[in-house]
Length: 233
Image (tube, rainbow, N blue to C red; front, side):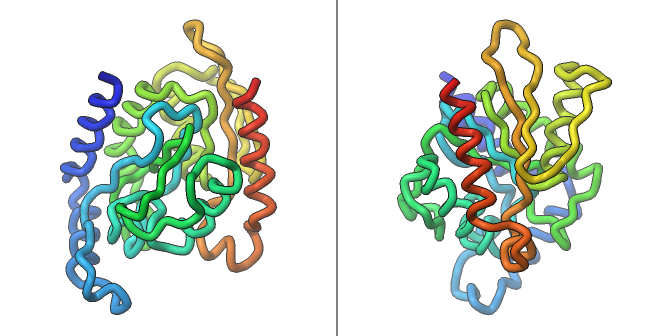
């Protein structure tokens, strides 16, 4: 039944047309295409989450890349950000392989699930507040499904979006203070007999960060080792 509810949720995500600006942008990108992918059929729809339906680790990104997930239909698939992220997840034992090129490439995640604050590729990679709000119920439904022990927020928008959702559900004290920085971790309140959970933060694995050295493989390895240790407790 749990697997069925996640499947239904993902079908709802894929069919979503709540944000006219995002609908227009994702479909225009899918129609015009990038020259390197001109012979490919773009996904051009909202991108559902991907991974282990029983995951303890929920990874939250910003949004699908216009010529990455918006093209392939799978989170962090077909772009340099995904190359970096899945290589690190493979090293940490959360993925069966270190590359992610297309939806049918055999990639599987173990104990991890990847989602995003916004499910459509936004212009300039900058979603509007109303678009973040429109997508928030999907993330909330995923939290209800997984009740994750660990949440890894990739970038400040994902970090702030997750905390805003928790506060909207009255699962955080109003005075709780969280500062986004790479490698930070924050224990979260234990509620209703649930196991202890923790929020982890990392810079987004965008090319802007990885190619300038702001983010390195070693930095991600340290964060994922920290998560592994926490999940063993």
